[in-house]
Image (cartoon, rainbow, N blue to C red; front, side, top):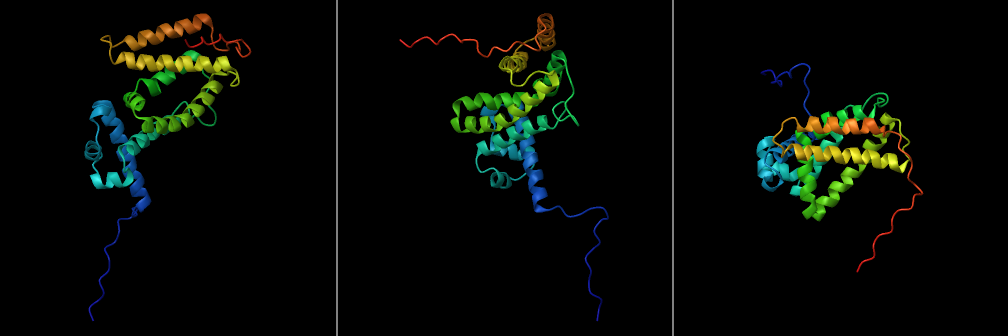
Length: 227
């Protein structure tokens, strides 16, 4: 009787990936491709076919994981936010570093707002204005990140987290960085972002606005009555 055939030996050090691992890899490739497409061609021209081609996956596999285009867009947005959450300075171990407000502005700009991926997030946020489903789902994802970001940023600055004005001061800086990111894409001066950042840090330094006073209890002006 001839000897039974045996299966060829598997290369040492390698193992067959599980279905879950292959699925996770496919989703990650799709999210990365979506963010790249949002940056390069914009929300209006994005399509599942374009994403499938860029991710080098079949359109069927893509729609299996993301039945609707908004499913893919939300997943890409969440992937981006989690990448920020797990990067320095937010993922510093064992605790976030103590930074001055100027250092925090530089870190946020370099790690988040000056990146191409941030423009992808901007595309999604603008598109959400006219798409209530997309807008609500993006806000749900954003809420988790905002809470983590604000809590860690407050610790890095050594500010009291329960102080409302400290919170508003942090939001003011974030709004300014968002504005510079958008403005940079329209300005002919390639150094305009650095000039604006330098000016803002100079203003902050001159005013020494880090531990700002608590405005809670100050009466807000009453809203005008409608005619």
